[in-house]
Structures are given as structure tokens and as C-alpha cells.
Image (cartoon, rainbow over all chains, first blue to last red; front, side, top):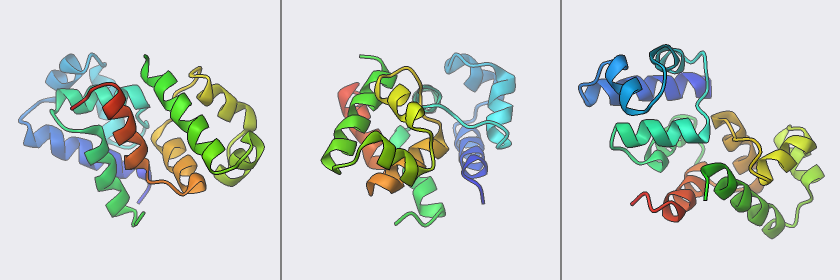
Length: 76
Length: 76
């Protein structure tokens, strides 16, 4: 699976686990709601700043999200 | 310091530590040399794919690079 799709799936799972709508996450991360949807569907890739803003809003560590992706792509 | 500059500094340090020129790193990560320079000077931010491509070329874990940034911005 492509990196963008892996990130999108993880983002959606984390958002739902946090009980947030795309609107709420977008507001808290100071991003546009449509951008959240594009990220979740793998149509856009996050930049470093977007990764940190989303992680903060979801109360996760950016490095933990990246670690999850590393596991899924077998980076180890 | 801004995230882009923190990443740029870390990228340059890792590249020099690996004994690589910008050309060599660009070739191995399949990126353009000028893009490496723009990243190192904080003028561009890496996407997820760029982060993974650079990390692979530098034989580092993407999550370790992100952890370094988290420490520098006091994310903990």
C-alpha cells in the first residue's frame, strides 16, 4: 500500500478513536476540512508542519504515527 | 526555530555525518539536488514520501528524525 494511503488510514483511525469529526480535527489543527478528507483518502500527503499540527490536535506523537507507518511498510 | 529549519539542520548534519554530498544524497533518494538544498535551508518542507526516501538513503529511521525534532521543539 502507498505511504499516502497508509497515513490516511492511520489518520482516520486516530480521528475516530479520538471521537472527532473531520470538522473538529480541522478546526483544532487549523487546517481546512476538505484537506483532512484529501489526507484521509490518500489524495494528499502531509508536510512536516501538517503532521505536527494533526498530531497535536489528536494528542499523539508525530514519531509514533511515523513508527506505525514504518511497521506497515516493513521499514525495519 | 521553525520546523522547516529544524528539519533542514538535521538533514544537513545527517548528510555530512554519512559523508555524502548533496548530489549523492539526491541521487540515492531519487530527488533533485536543488530540492535537497531547499530542504536544508528550510525553504521547503519534506512530504512523507520525501522523509522516507531521505531516511532510507541516509540509513536512518524516519521516526528517529521526527523524534529529534520533537525534542528540539519540546514536544514532550
